Image 1 (cartoon, rainbow, N blue to C red):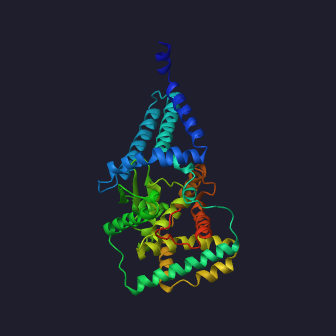
Image 2: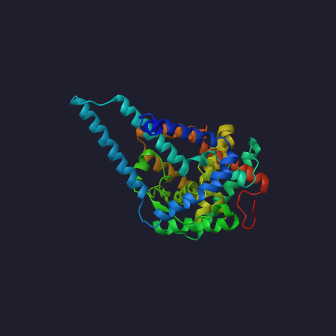
Image 3: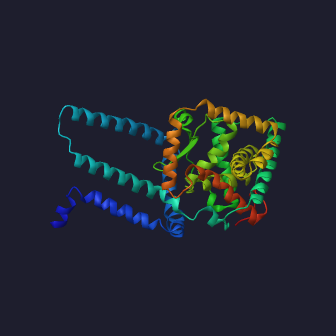
Length: 369
């Protein structure tokens, strides 16, 4: 009877949820433990189940849920203030407990379905890469190698007058890239598929995101308004999140490895172009003259792509974007990425570690870590 009475106490549920959240936090404190028991143990079946449920639906279920939640929260806030204005009793204690309970439930569901992956040992552990500080010379070397690849792939696209595939073809091609990568790196096998065009492109344009992963539905969404040459790598990045690589630098690196292990020139160009921008930005912080000199060597068509990308960003500049970026920066910092938005640039460290081990910056078919 005492236990039954305790369970009915208004503090019981939030207290139990808090203990569960604390236990989850302690579990996630060990990257190797997370890697073994969650990321390569519990998580793959969860992700497979979610993608099986949502993958066959041609539109984004997650986007619809997000839109419904915005409407629901707006309605609840309106009802709350209306009741308060009419003088109806609204218990601050009850409201606080409900809010805390909701936050704890979302935290637990988010982490159990995907979020613990932020704390995994990750791709560098799987590939046996030794990460650490890199020198200016190593950064210069990687910049030059990336420049060479960008120019070669862009020249090939230009010479063959390669057309950008349509939306459906591009989504299908992204899955084929991972199918090819999975032959060399089994942990990159991607099946079933749940990759879809975003229904919130307009929001992504103004808030500054090109793709996103929904951990509650297992769907990866692609903003098809971004410049066409950026879309392939963006899709590979989001699929990497689906595979459990939560940190942004890891998703970038996994997408890059998948692209360069494929035989698809468009995807190889898109990946090398994007990673070159990160590498050149990193070089600019230590040697702006060398960075400018290297970037000046871009293929004319690649320079035109870069200008198109800048034009896209300028077109959607607005007062809200810095606020959203600040919020996302803090979100990344809370989730094991102390560099915040700069975490995307850390793909350079992964690439340098890969180069030091293999002597190349391209994934080599048939070579397994």
